[in-house]
Length: 152
Image 1: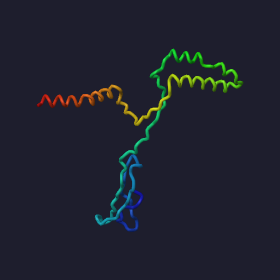
Image 2: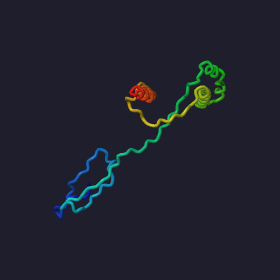
Image 3: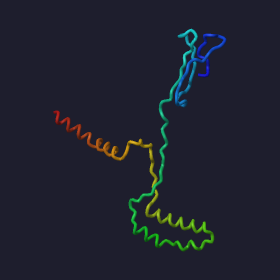
Image 4: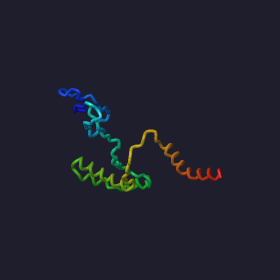
């Protein structure tokens, strides 16, 4: 609090009330309100921001090797006209041509894809836990139906 909250002494009011937090962004609208509940203490009011702002999704780019065929890829690399790059006098231009040619061949065989990552996974949530959770979701209706039939 930056405003005085104790008016015991009319000449020298003091700020004796504290709002302590480790995340100052979550405390908003601190007000000091004079009420008739106390002789010389004002009431402190503040609001807390407890919800988190929704994170924007992250996009990652990756290559899909789902339909990758080694023999076709190597055949296309053999037929790629890398010798045309010798026309350029500058080494940087030759490098640019070779990299673009290689990139086009790779894009044909392993295309770039974009995936949305909605949130960060917690460290303990590995593939085994996710698999077990999926089994639980799959079999829980069957198990509850079986238990209901057995009890009946």
